[in-house]
Length: 481
Image (cartoon, rainbow, N blue to C red; front, side, top):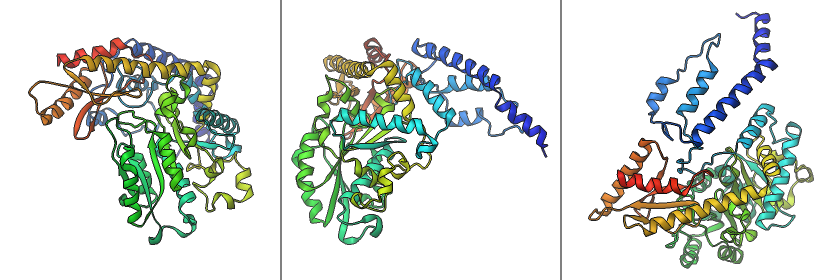
């Protein structure tokens, strides 16, 4: 049994100011060297080739009671074995290479550990998040009546918005009375909707039959010519459509649904219109590309991830409501017009409006980076990534041995390699083999997707340091395979 004196000695060492200072300097030095290696392509592979079983063998689950581990060596191994998102060849999933300043601010937030669900626990960050929500709502085109919160990721953000939609449009107090057979709810979504939307509906207890998928057109947007027919079919089944979820933009192809037309449709039928703008809402920063979100000011709620196209570390998601009073509906037993005065006056206690009872300091990093680096950096970044993807698409469309799935609308692009005489089944298998070999070679990290029974290679050009030369190099490597 450890003596109290020994325990005090160990705790004092763990919280020693000078030891912390020394470790901090060493960690930043190691990360700065790592950043230089990643950006300079001096790492062996974008995604190191280690199976889950191999990694389990490397990292023991046994911990010494005296704690004699070497943190520097462990950090070196973490850096070597991680997926290198800052490498210009990282063009896979929709997770950005975060700004160094943002990462440092995240470190500050983690160290302070001010949970921001309650004002007293995180006063500075609560105010920063309030100002950020106002700024983002202004970009959307909402009035001063808008409001919202930050939460942990787009999946939780979509759930939060749909819970508010359910309460607002159910026709009765569903919090108190629950789901009944006379009011069977339904949600209309695009067949290209992110799986988190369907998961959110399941979490709400509605079941798979409550999710109604609308086919997409040749540009992978909701097919407006089929939407009303599907809506009428749902009504005939005695279901009440309380929400429609649009993409701004979709995960697979980066396609933006026609928000203005969908807003007309929903307004005429008293349906809540929610936009999953986790990836694509950042187009609102761009004078050149904000047209893609035309009609955003008419939707009821929007989810917007800062850890995608705002260069922040994960997770940093804003859920923004056109009618800010509705932001209390998600987790309240009462409708907005019946709220206790105390809850609405306590806008600064986000626990009224978010799933988390303990919430990270999400606003600090974005607020500081916007203040220090300026809005132009972020707007220019969106322009550059979208422009670069368009240039890459032009090269692919002019190549006889490649084929685009669809002309990209954002910085997500899907294409496939063609070999004359191959059947569709063989071409599908070919793309999977190409992806596997590209990742194994180590110069690039790409993913794949399936669109209407056809397999495509998929790239998200999200790293601000990726160049057109990097992208054409990918095509050359595919050819060489």
